[in-house]
Length: 142
Image (tube, rainbow, N blue to C red; front, side, top):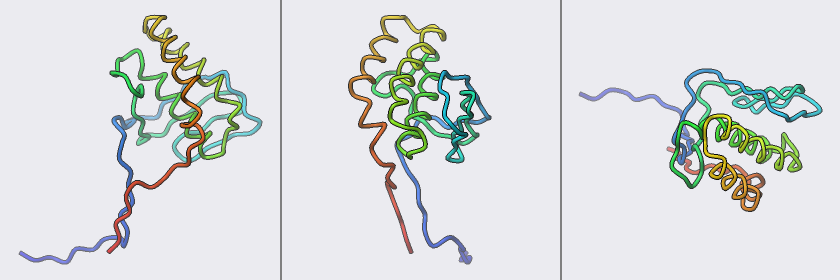
């Protein structure tokens, strides 16, 4: 059976994410931007509350097996780094984001030594992820 298929001229998507948020989520952070910032998926108000919209995608704890104790910290960290990459937060935010990620990990039950190792890794190697431009992975046109 032949049917007419209507579609957009372009299909634009990214790969590389493991988790997609199903409900709104927020977390109080120690960040204090001068003004409300948002990219439509992640928002940060002047009081430090970070909001995530349903559908937001992130990859968990990068370079390590994901555990329940790493989910909220990795979500907050990925969202903050995304805001930095997009120029909505200054790079000077990075040290506070990195420290707060480790604090969330510990509060959520991660062993302190493991949380500290993750903190040291993002402190040393995270800058390129906070500054590299967001790129489109695939673009299919017809």
